Length: 276
Image (cartoon, rainbow, N blue to C red):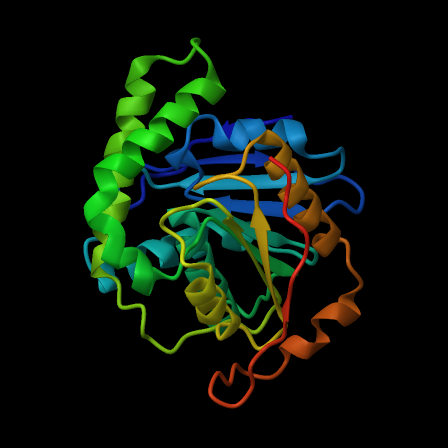
C-alpha cells in the first residue's frame, strides 16, 4: 500500500517521496521529478501490476539555474534512491524529469556502483534544439496545462495548474543553462519515447543525440501525441519498462565497457508507435 515518508528537508528545498514496495519478482520503477505533473505517481500506481514497486521523488523548489546546481540536484536524487536500488530496478523519467533521470543513471554508475536494468526517458528532445525553441515557452505551457486540465477533470483545484505553470517555467529556465555538449553517457540500456506530433522535438536530432549516450543499443520509439502520452500510451511505456525489469541478467552484460561515443555508435531499434 502506498505510504508517504517525511524525511528531513533537502538543503535545496522541501522534498517528498512515495513508495510502494515490490512483491515477488516484480521490478521497481524509479520516477524522479514526479511532482511536475498532477497526480503523476499516484496515476502510475494504478497502472502497475501486482508485484511491481514504485519509488517516486521530487524536490519541488530545487530547480537549478546553472549546470553545477543541476548536477547537485541530481546527486540529491541519486542519494535518496540509493536505499531502494536493487536488481531489476528501472529508471523512468518524463519531460524535465527525463533529463534528471539520465543524470541520476550516470551518478549511480560512476559513484554508487549500480546500473539500472534499463533507463526509459519520455518526452526528451535533443536539448541543443530544444533550447532554440524555448522562446515559445508560454504557448507550450498553455497547451500542456489545457491537456492536463482535460485529463484530470473538473475535480482538480485551479491552483494545481498554476503550480504546474510555475514549475515548468523553472524547468525551462534550467534547461537554458545546461551545456548539452558535455561528453557524457551511461553503460546500461536506454530507451527513448518522444511524441510524434511534438512541435518542439526534431526527431532526427533527438535520435542522433541519444544514440551516442549509451554503450548499449539504444531504442528510439514514438508515441502518438504531443509532449506527453495519454493513458494508453503510458500503459504501453510502463509495460515496456516492466518487461525490461524482468529481463534476464544476460541482457546487461554488454554494459560492462565504458561509453565510447566516438568509436562505437549504438544500434537504434525502431518500432511501431505507442497508442495514445
